[in-house]
Amino acid sequence: MAIHTLIIGGGVVGVSAAYFLARRGAPVTLLDPTDLTDSASTGNAGLIAIDHGPLPRPGLARQAAKWILDPGNPLYIPLRPSLARLRWFMAFHRACRPAHHDHCFRALNAHGHAAGACFASLVADEALDCEYHATGQYDVFMTEPGLEQGVEEVRRIRDAGYGAEVLDGAELRRREPAYRDEVVGAILFTDRAFANPGAFLSELAERARSHGAQIRTGIAARELIVDRDRCAGAITTDGERLEAEHVVLAAGAWSSTLAARAGIRLPMEAGKGYHLTVSSPDPPLTTAAVLAETFVAMNPLRDGLRLAGTLEFSGINHRLVRKRLDMLLRGARRYVRGMNDVTVHAEWCGLRPCTSDGLPMLGWAPRVRKCFLATGHAMMGFALGPLAGRIASECILDGEPSVPIDAFTPTRFQKK
Ligand SMILES: Cc1cc2nc3c(=O)[nH]c(=O)nc-3n(C[C@H](O)[C@H](O)[C@H](O)COP(=O)(O)OP(=O)(O)OC[C@H]3O[C@@H](n4cnc5c(N)ncnc54)[C@H](O)[C@@H]3O)c2cc1C
Image 1 (cartoon, helix red, strand yellow):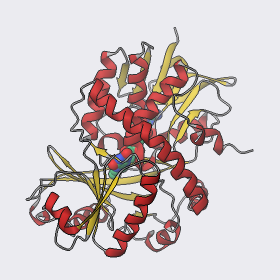
Image 2 (image 1 turned 120 degrees about the vertical axis):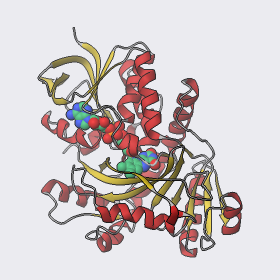
Image 3 (image 1 turned 60 degrees about the horizontal axis):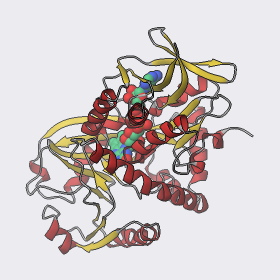
Image 4 (image 1 turned 30 degrees about the vertical axis):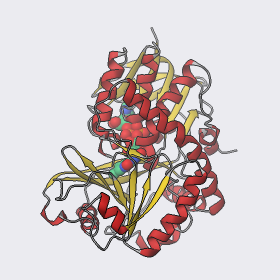
C-alpha cells in the first residue's frame, strides 16, 4: 500500500513536516541517511532571527570580489567553480540589485511574524527542552560606521513591525559585562529568540514519532519515482521502492540533485559554514549575538559557547578549512573578554541550502505533481524551518497554506 506522505530529509524542515502531518493523523515516513544529529539543522548558530534579510544584498558582489579567493575572509569561493555554480553566481549577482533586495525583504519580513509564532508555539505546546530563550538577540558593533549602518536597519525592522532597541557601549556592558571596552554599541532585536538547534531537532523528532511518524534513519532516497507527470515516491539507496501519494523534498543542499534527476530545476548551492564550541568565557554571556564586523554568531549554550559563521561556496563537501575555523575565535576575541582562556570542545562544518535569489523554495514542484519542495532557506532555515514544515502539511492536507507563499514558489526558476 502506498504511504500517505514520504518526506526526504530529516533536517529542521523535514522533521517539522513529519511532526505537523503526524499530529493531524496523516501516515508519514521520513528518510535520512544520518542519525539526525549532524546536519545544518543541528550545527547552526541557533538564532531565531525572524526579521533577517536575504543573503544577496546591494554591495555584497563588490565586497565579495575583494574577499573571495582568501579563505581567511568571511566569504570564500575557491577557484575552478563548475558551470552550474558560475550560472548560480551570475543569478546571485543579479539578485544583489536594490529593487530585488527590497522585494525579498518584504516577503521575508511578512513571513517572519508567522515563523516566530510557529516556533514559539511548537516549543510551548510540546514542552521542548531546547534552551529556547525569547529574550531577543544582539547585533554588536566595534566601529561607529558599523553601528550607524545598523541603526539604518532599525528603521526598516520597525516599519516591518519588529522591535529593536539601540544601546551604547556602556549600556551593553551593564547588561552583558563580557563585552570589551572597545565595543561601541549594540542593537537588541527584541522579537528574535535563540535555542539549541540539536536539542530542538531531537526533541521534535521524538514528538513526531510519538504522534505516529515513522522516521527511518541510515537510509537515503536515491531517486524520485516519476510516473508520467506525477511523483509517486522514491527508491532508496538499498533499492527499496517506497510508493507514496505525496512526497516532500526537504533534503537541504542535496535537494537539487534529487530534483534534477526528476526533471525539476532547483538551482541551489551549498553555503558551507563552521562552528566551534568553546568553554564559557569569564564573565559569561547570557544572550545570543552577531558580532557585526566579523559576522561571527555567538550562542551561550548549556554545554559551552557556540561560535558560528563564515560562508564558503566550494560545493558539497565537509572539508574543514583550518583558517576559516580560526576566524571564528579570532573574531570573537576582538569583542569578548576572557576568550583567550577558553578551551575548544568541538569543531564542525555544515551546508546551508542557498538559492540564487535569496528566497526559500516552498511550494508544489513545477511539471511533476504531488512533489512539495521545502528547501533553500540559506541562513534562516532554523528560524523558518518549523513554519516551512507546517506549510507543507497544510498544502498536503488542506490544499492551501495558512500564510501566503507566492513569493517562494519553485516555479520561478522554470525556463519560460
Ligand atoms: C554555520 C551555520 C550557522 C547557521 N546559523 C543559523 C541561524 O543561526 N539561524 C538560522 O535560522 N539558520 C542558520 N543556519 C541555516 C540553517 O541551519 C539551515 O538553513 C537549515 O538547517 C536548513 O534545514 P534543512 O532541513 O532545509 O536542511 P538540512 O539541515 O541540511 O537537512 C537536510 C537533511 O537531508 C538529508 N538528506 C540529504 N540527502 C538525502 C537523501 N538523498 N535522502 C534522504 N535524506 C537526505 C541530510 O542528511 C540532512 O539531514 C546556519 C547554517 C550554518 C551551516
